[in-house]
Length: 589
Image (cartoon, rainbow, N blue to C red; front, side, top):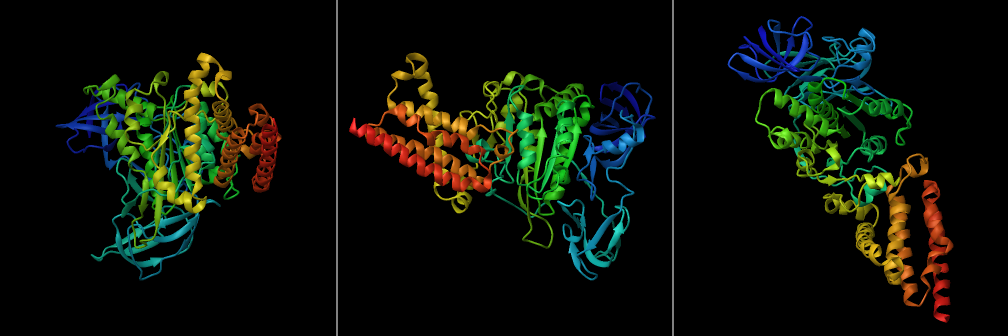
């Protein structure tokens, strides 16, 4: 037991802590506020308190729990809303109303609810950490596998099915040393330690988001890392909501760390109403929410990203594809800066701690495609990490943006000028990049055809050429350009408005399958090729722009998915005939 000698905001210094260790969770003061030891100097401990410290003063006692900051893992995680240190907000509301009281202790997993456990292991089976013991149908969308805790192995002595709470014993194991271990459905894991895996693989399958600018131009792989930087009002949160809604993953862990409360409220209102197209259930049935908004304790904001990614790793170990969406890592970095300042550490650039880049790397490097631990060597899971970055004034040269760019392989640079023009998603195609295009090429060639990647490259080349031509247009006007350059500008406009721009309020256009994206882009590029051939024959450029099929290409984005192939074939046929007619008139003239 220690005694407080200093209180500085969320930082508390206590002496007499010789029985404690670094990273131990402690209880502070008479209200038993939860905190974590950041560093030790002799018997003096610097403690990060995850709750409001007003009223706390020197002389108050500090008690160590002897455990690291950990999360509870088991049935009941999905559909739940936690704060940054995995306290269930709905459970807290039932205990103390709408305002969280200091020192409130509510278990992360419901201790009273019974779950129907179906055993898959048998008496006499030899099992190791990560092996499945049985299943619980947690939600209609997700089958929750109950696993042997990491590092444990032995022989199943007894196992029983039926309805149990998470604390009741369901399995007994006899270890090699003859010890008998009673197992329930709860596992605990320290959040700052990555869960182990057998092997990590290079990501080779794209994460389908249904957003054309992402999937076609700047794809992210399952098990990859991506960042969404952008100034205020450019649509970072909307892009992340779209990823959470439409991505073809089994589980979504959405971390709201330091963003405004109304944005988390939007998530809480929308997700129960939105239907997952793969399962027919609401999105909440496969979602875990970590809500540590800007008006909640700063210290807990720092812990929230680790809480979220540890929960994600747990589902990854079951063999699921998981997406972690952090909104935003800039607010998390600000929490690091505040705690670093109170610890009187030497500041780095813009006051951020010198270890900012390594902390960012520790978070993103927990993503990946892995062979899960256990006897089943064929079980693989993936964890995709997507973080928003909110640079002040949209300045991408600031430390959090630069540190993130050095780590992630996909960079979706949001542009406020596009957002003001109502072009959404407002991802700037000239400033963004993806380093996964080469590793995903094999998947594209097999699933969509060998011309998919080449079409993407052609579209990017046209958009880049448009940027160069616009500089000339600003000087001498559009009419001074050659017909071929004017055609380039028109095709680039079609790519921007008819392909990249999406309307989230139109159900048909809010999500596009890969096949639909392929056909949409191919139609625009075919128009470009045929028009250039017609220009060679003397066709009049304005006549080519006025053909009826040109309008059909623009309206095609509102065609239902099941009718798109037939509409594409009809537009292609009409376009060919109409361009040939224009070309023939040009030859006659």
